[in-house]
Image 1 (cartoon, one colour):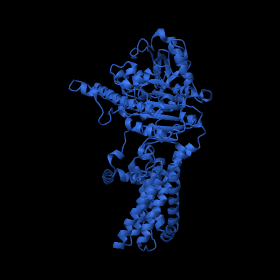
Image 2 (cartoon, rainbow, N blue to C red; image 1 turned 180 degrees about the horizontal axis):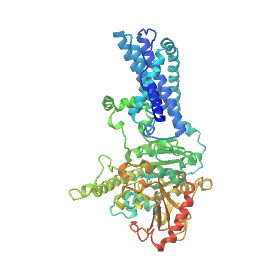
Image 3 (cartoon, rainbow, N blue to C red; image 1 turned 90 degrees about the horizontal axis):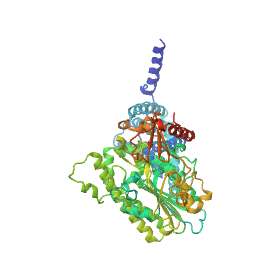
Image 4 (spheres, rainbow, N blue to C red; image 1 turned 180 degrees about the vertical axis):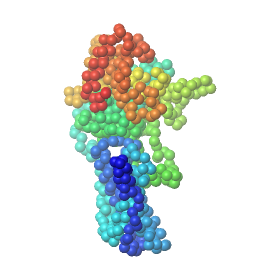
Length: 632
């Protein structure tokens, strides 16, 4: 009985929303073309204002990052309402043209329904985790209700449209003028606000080679001589033989690199940006009077919307995100993106936008060009420059015209997919290495290199069949965690020095601050790695723990359900040569990297290592207690 009553109530509610009410008895609606055009313009202005307000509200409350926001233009504050205004305005003109040709009394009623439906649809499409079909049904039901209410008050609504459209239009014009100026002058204003820099302060260049594993590089003993320029650079400074990344994927590894914090302490995760709980390297150097520039080729995970641009006076991810074009205006709103994704929209874009201007993969030559141009404009103060190279990331496609020594050398020989992928990967390394050589040649010619602190590392490595895995972000084994780390700083870092001690990339921030002469005011936890080459001991002790984490189980695709990271939050702790891994399901692993560098023999069940296992388990538990996302 109760179930039947409940079903009856649900049915009545559904009918009240989705079932069309009786056609309202409304006053006669004279079809005036001007009214139709103004109504379309009014709906566009109102929809744009509502969409912008909703975007700002949800961004402020949830802080979530998605693909739409990653591509969001810096001028979104006016592009979003302008796009809706143009689309609805064009539709209003279309209705007005029809009204001139054929004065049908029901035309205005149809226009109100169409405008209302599109307006509601543009807002409800922002609701996450609901099927599009359900959202369309919801839009139809809500818009019918709203349109019916407006039609019952047709004359009053017409007066509202006529009086408020000029006001809303003036507001949009003012927003365009003010926001365009603010965005255009943001870098100049940030530079003007910088304090004076200390005399003789060195430039700082932080280079991250995205997806580069240490053992693939010439200075780390790779079988293939793919990176001779990196070998020359390593000979000029200090090479850390056992540098371990804080995470096997880009976002959290970069956030830890910038803040000196372990990923378990940070807010950054898939879809969640780095918050302002901790200062970044760019913020620190800006406070010292440095001009700060970031140039990234991993435009998704290093995107400014993820918080990595904080502290930079200049930051480049997607080129389009700072341009003002018709395509970018359309991309700003949901309805505009729907137009762009349509087949007619795609044809128009391809006819108007040439491929060189519509780039979605930056190669190293492009990063070099942009960074060198920026550096040439900032000779009046020291610079902190961050470069992220994406050339070695899958799908392992070198830049057009690049040399392919390994693929061509193996052409015609039997190879499985993994071997072919490794050949492509090493070919990408060859091209990246050549571009790095060009970068440093240019810096040397500019006369800046002698007073530049250079740090070269990687965010993570890449697996090629080890443990039956390929790729990154899926485990905490050495192919994904062991990365290069070079420090080149004339007269401060000894040339040709190799540090065998295992270290964490989370100490890079403290090291840079120390070597740049600001160690006394450094906000970064951990110790400077400089003590390791300043010590007279062969293998000096280093007090900082080496912790890594991957927390992406809920975002991994179905075909990756077999990988270790799919079991939940994984964390690892390295202690000298022992590597302890705790999987998300509680399963523990223990490896002796000195005797077993490939991690083939799990010692977790070995009685002789029971005390080591207990000690490392307790140590990781103490560290994990400060985690934002603790292990259950």
